[in-house]
Image (spheres, rainbow, N blue to C red):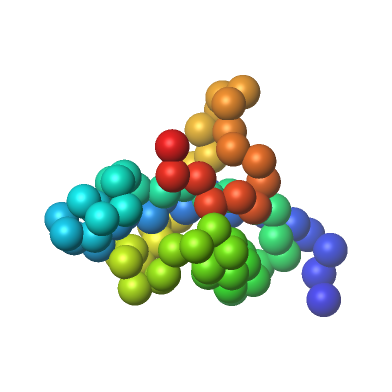
Length: 81
């Protein structure tokens, strides 16, 4: 197993208009440092469930470059703000 870790950031769009109205936000953001993309997406699903959301309410996560800002949410938290 490799010790190389990479930051994985994802933009997760709410799937449809009815889900957006019910949830009250159009998208979420999540990032974590992991050894593989498979591990990152698995932890994303767990973070989503831990935050009280169902993966079926969201479209497929899109990997994005991490924005270089000081106001990133805590690592591993499913952020909807």
